[in-house]
Length: 362
Image (tube, rainbow, N blue to C red; front, top):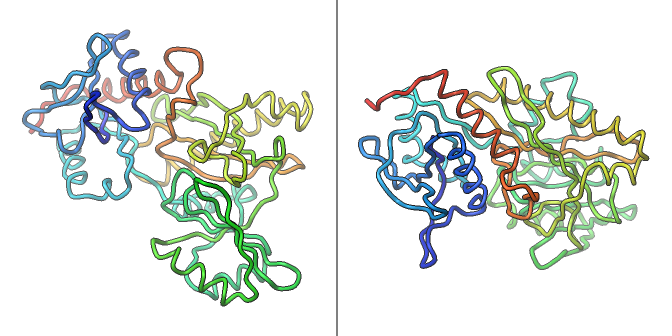
């Protein structure tokens, strides 16, 4: 089995970015089950003579490796995933009948359109539209007075803006940086738009109504459900956690200083013990419904999703985001040596490779 990602070599050895520790777990689980696992990049790939890194006596060694039976795509850059090199590599996989997942990044607008097509899921979607001009913003404020502006290709809570229209028809712009929160007031919509425009050049962006979600310890709260595919039809929830934002942040992303809490603890404190059981079950079922719909309509093969959900004070769930390359930050890891998500990724690889059989490259 091969994992495709970016590889960085340093004086201290080789690194695989934010998934480095997760890769060790994958390798350990593979060794325990008699599977040869290695990591390769777009630059080390060669269909005639593959080079990769494999774990040997707790150290990553570089060497010639067999052509993969199945590949897990963990390329972290959307730009790199659109490159000629990536397209050539995946073309080789298709030619040699090597299954690979997750197929690609999905953008927020694409996901919104897919989910909007489901009558069952529509009530859980915040009102959203593409930010195309000043008139788009004006039209949104005619309906909603508090909106988020999000990059459709963004991740880790970066470049997210919140704008509120006040009763005196002034506009309050709020956005976060790694050093804290920045707030500015604008007296007209034109002044707001002029201030936003330079920041939105690396678009496109999405306009989305702000949902007043429940908070925990007076901080932004959401719930991450990690879902994995078991076979061609069935998905399962592998883990669920509550995520609480860092101080002066309106996103609960771990990359922005967020913290993880047990979902049972948080829901019990907010909604009571009995209601929390019902809410956990409802959020899990909603997550599975989401991954089924997205994987069915997005095209390509997907075996893992991170689903971010919120709850309003009445207990109504809201869909915040669908992640095709969910974070594997080290502070997400629990005390156990190998996370359930690592085992689930490898088990799905086994399922795909056993169906496909080993193929020699053409």
